[in-house]
Length: 184
Image: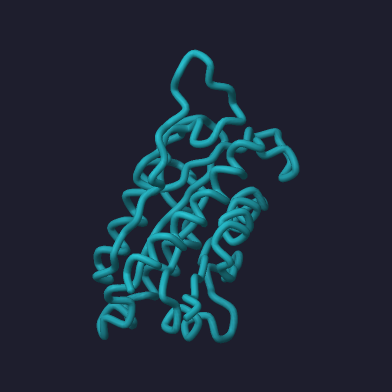
């Protein structure tokens, strides 16, 4: 039986949306974009309720998720109260312009949100590319275990996101599929 993966994310400039798309390519998941006002489209909450896995995504701005993502998270108190997302698989990703950029703070926020909802968190399951021979387009070059971290230089277009980060996002999507298969 096919499992339903929903990738709920906010993207300010399109870079995080491209990472969400790559996660969807690897997982077969559906994209659910949070708009510029911090709202889901019609039927969005129902999509999340029906999902087997929810992947949270936000750019990192000023050391945390975007205010639009936080508005969505605050609005999730209704499903929280009834524990609608309990025991669903959860994962998260973030993108910012610098190699670190306090992205771990954003991943911790996404993890805490998942734990408030009694979800089951899954990390990248990837070793970092941290040898002298490593190059920027290697898998998990940013070196994150707890969730997906990607980099889009501040002057880069969406088309210029490093190929290794897109490949890492697709591999992360596959990891979510594998995690769901183990929850049978």
